[in-house]
Image (cartoon, rainbow, N blue to C red):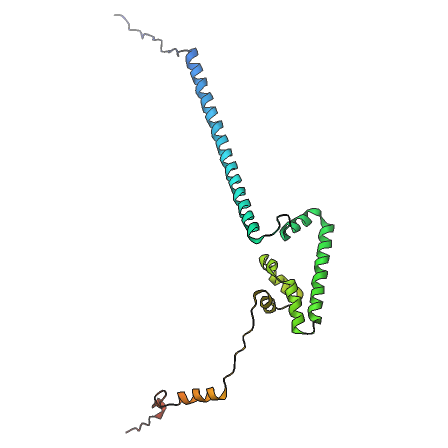
Length: 200
């Protein structure tokens, strides 16, 4: 009786070698992807630069409209620009500016207190108030520093005058009183306290 022996089979598979045509096509695809990603990044940067440029154009256009409307000089620096310039110069310039500010506030306060009449106080108030103070919202600081009331400042800047109520004359008061005492306007009616109840 013959014995059956297992037969070995060669299971190793050979991978096909990459031909020059396939390797070149793979390199071409990678190059195309790299170029596309580079162009996409450049496109994003250009879009951001375009947005910044449009924002600057709109800002300068608005500034030109304001200047043409008010007729102010473009070269005159604003208070905010002056403040930034002083902050960049350093402590000595800041100390000098603050000293001048406090001295000016003290002088205005002294002038306002020493004013003999209302007209003189109004003149002092009108010389330190105006559209610039209102634009930079420094009205509260001005009132607290100089001691001038907010109503006096608003009266000068906005022309708000105090309205005095006129008193009625005696004839008008008598006419109003006679009108409300007429029987067809106000008549006497019974009240709850006018009733008298007796218990049985």
